[in-house]
Amino acid sequence: MLVRFIAVSLMGMSIVELALYGVEYKFRHTPVNILLSTLWIVAFLVGATMLIKAKAIAEWLSDRL
Image (cartoon, rainbow, N blue to C red; front, side, top):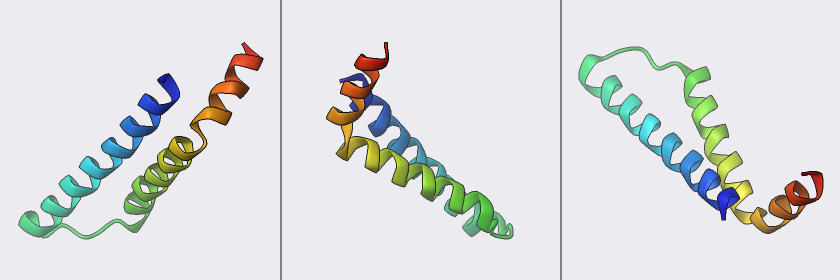
């Protein structure tokens, strides 16, 4: 359950940050930073992968601890 919560939180945080970045770009006309955008997209993809593989990750963590 904790692995799923972390995965959904990571995905939600990425979506919110990208949306805020888009709003800032639209209203303040700041230049787009490709590295920052790519970082949040990668964080979203990591969260999605964690959500798909949540059971395997939870079992792996329980074996390690």
